[in-house]
Length: 285
Image 1 (cartoon, rainbow, N blue to C red):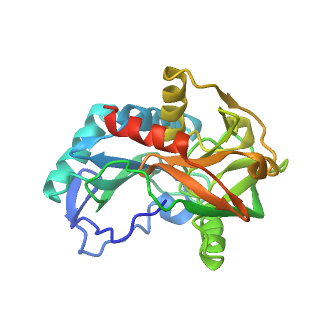
Image 2 (image 1 turned 30 degrees about the vertical axis):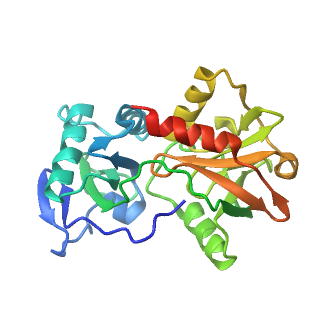
């Protein structure tokens, strides 16, 4: 699910200004830096188009309401969309991974004394081909050390990402393509950077939001595509043992699209559904 040889853009955006990424500046007063008090989105820029941005903005707006961040009137979908396009132009990029971060600004310790919102955007170049299915597939295993708790923050991408960082370290240590996190009841939740789907006898299954997974943009897109193609899809509790019974397993996120899982321990999977979805994503506009 990672893209190699990503090159960072030379220009970033921070609180209304386009700045050189090479100029050191500090986030010491930013609450995302100090407390993880913020939200972020990982967004795909493909051929100069910001893919699925209404879904990303809707999740950000919901997250700001949940975190009780006071959104300035100017900070709307059109404004952020246009800033991303302008930043891409300044970096001469048409295909990139975009990180859009909103954090609570202002003084205070755990309890904020003042309110405000800081906006940070940067981007890294990506290959021009959009959502092409990786021919090799990935290997996965289960990461059990940190179960994902279910609460009002579970569906959001917050700036406190330690469970995913630790899962990533486990993945690297064991030379895996990805790892699957569990919820507190032991059901599948999500991968370290993606939502997960299983295919059993032609039916697609994915953990529900009650399994503490992120309410992923590509998860939402894929569920819509399956419905449009009249493929049965269910959101439910999935026990880890079902990974061994599934015909296919695939992972989805907004940057990579669909990635098929080739192997879980000694289980080998096919990728018919993954290929169909990846081909449909390329055509989807």
